Image 1 (cartoon, rainbow, N blue to C red):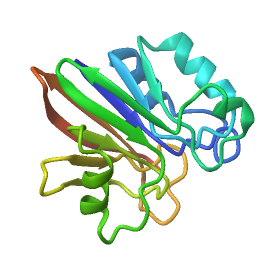
Image 2: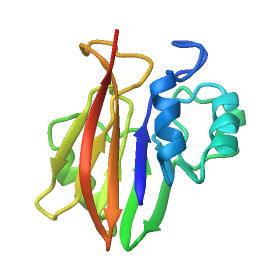
Image 3: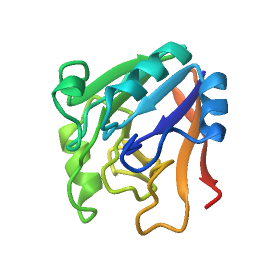
Length: 165
């Protein structure tokens, strides 16, 4: 099972839409995970139409139209892997311990908000992933997203992709 992991798209405020490279990844993905800050429901509609499956949450910049359609926390079991998705996890300091306590039933936690790519593992074994943003790099050198694979309950082939400026 192939995953595309994105967050903080801020469409149409920060970009008119997703980059074509990301749309090509959507076509290849079995599941698209979006960790919030969509800004406009139009991108959710487009991803729903063009994806096999979307797992998403709302973020702090998402208004009522998105909050009515998306949860604050999403959970799914994908080929035996327990996935949780949330927009905000708080400060970087102590993140692994805080998230391990908050998500004891997850194998992988995808989050956004900071626009900073993150890949770490808590002492509990919980893997934390932030894809950065494919449309708004903020203080990062490049916009980014993640791809990964799931097989037999294991996350493999996690790869951070950067986009040209």
